[in-house]
Amino acid sequence: MPSGRVHTLINSGAYLLTVAGAAYAAHTDLYTVSVRDAAGFSAAFWAGTLLLSPDLDLAEGQVSSKRAWGPLGFIWVPYGKMFSHRGLSHSWLIGPLTRIGYLALIVWALLYLLRLTVPDLYAALPRSGLPLEWNFWVPILTGYYLSQWLHLIADGIAPDTGFGRLGRKLRANTPFRRKRARRR
Ligand SMILES: [Zn+2]
Image (cartoon, rainbow, N blue to C red; front, side, top):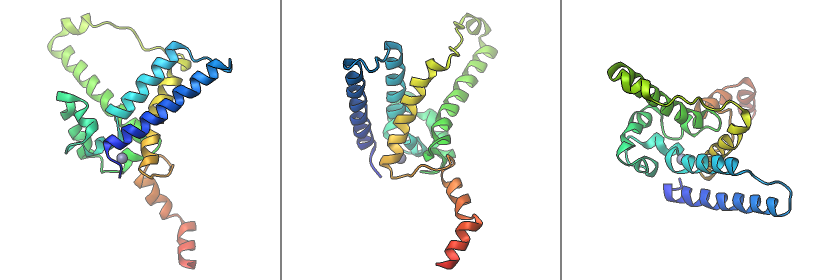
């Protein structure tokens, strides 16, 4: 299993290739990426590489993506306890969503607590809704998922149903597989 540093190195290389590709596309008038899209893609890619790595499933111990959170690293300890290493956390579709969902849950809980304890401060928080147009989210999702998939490829995990170990277990028990296994 590659270390956190190796994963960062691989992702950095892929990022440089993406930037080179975008520069080439702009240079040849093929397509010019807007500043907003480039910023969204880059922020999500680096957040996914450094802060939201699938290896947070090891956060009950020490792991570089937990250290990257500094004093806030402890918030990932329950995540590490909840998810077995290279299980659901390392699946292609659901895995990246588990970390976003976990983080969203913590933010929601903190806001809820704030509302209960200091309602005045809660009321003073800025309330700009998130943009709903899909073209705002596409570069962000692309950057995030690309960072996660590069990690899974480096780990040698093939694309699956999105459910990781559970998916593999289910597929291993399909009648088709069992028949083939018997024939062998
Ligand atoms: Zn991993």
